[in-house]
Amino acid sequence: MASALGLRPIVRASLQAGVQDTTVFESAAIVMFHRIPYAEAKRRGVIQDQILEALTAGVHELDDVDYGYADRLIAERLDQISEC
Image (cartoon, rainbow, N blue to C red):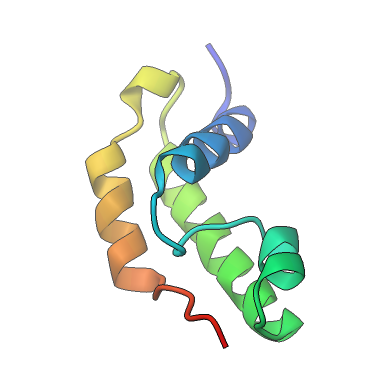
């Protein structure tokens, strides 16, 4: 049994591995490999942290994470990164 805080890095990696578009990325990767300002990468990182917090609230096992809910939150809160 893991804490919600301990699950967050695992859930983050799982989400990043399963995303085929340019919606969810690590902030460092956004800055290094896309032409968007650091402030935008930081803003997206804050939103991603909020999504992770919502996904792991009250969850103690990785199998209990609702990835359908994750998809909805990502679609609602994060727009796709467009290349400049």
